[in-house]
Image 1: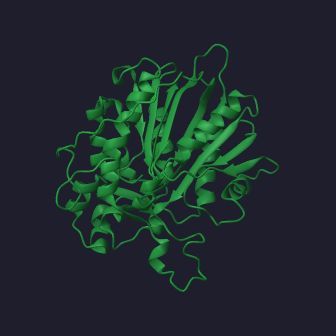
Image 2 (image 1 turned 90 degrees about the horizontal axis):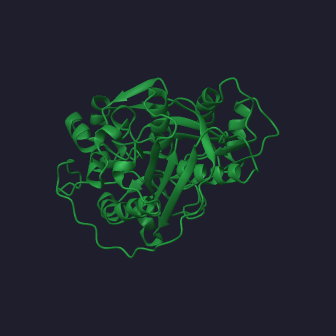
Image 3 (image 1 turned 180 degrees about the vertical axis):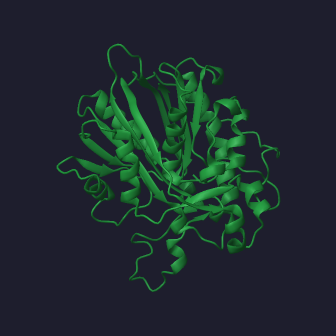
Length: 356
């Protein structure tokens, strides 16, 4: 989702220091924790297109000031891609694969498609110079990578595959609506990939826990109505704006306040943990103010990966880009607990707890 938390001033874009509504009590469904999936992230990588667009450059295009953009969104600059998504994905995938053998499954976990048919994963494989490898896509809005990661981990743990490449590549700026400054000021372009393998016998890496919830009644809060049958090119009522992203920011904010905390608490309680037991939090890069709210869930800012100021909100690629950033920094160590967390259109919330 494009704004996991949001201030409630008159514009709907309050600062991180704004007042926070108290989440209403949610019914808690207790369950036996499923067994951990014995998989590890063997490698990660991300790709940032070379062209930079600063807040100052974007400001006159959306009728706002540079200060407004930085204050409301936290995005000082973003990358703009001049390459198709499959080329961006291949950049990240090659870096993640390094000089190792090819994967035995390729999963594209992106919102932005090259086209509807064939699937974008086909073109990613073609761009990598490979053939004959099973490939498909997982689409869950901004949670696409997280959902694909969970699915891939289950396949690896079951022995169906041994090297699964999960890759996200997004050109969110292509579909931004410049007449909607809130979302237009957030979006950026980028790609990232992660390679999943079975955990070696001498390591403890695992996908320890997973939770996801979806509330379809909130589907209209975040939409891109085109690219499907609802706003078909054959429909005389279809307008150009139907192919641009739109969001009810205050509605998303209210849902996030109600739903994120209970999911996090339940996920940690599944394993007898508290926020203090989590070494690193890798969230969807919704917005600067949104990330600034995570300490209110018990996660200190110094343990939360925040790259939104440099890259903006890169849709489904934002979580794996942040994860690759953490891995490249050398700060995360094998055996540490890493929480991947995000929201997505639908309205959905998901979290994955890893032992790195």
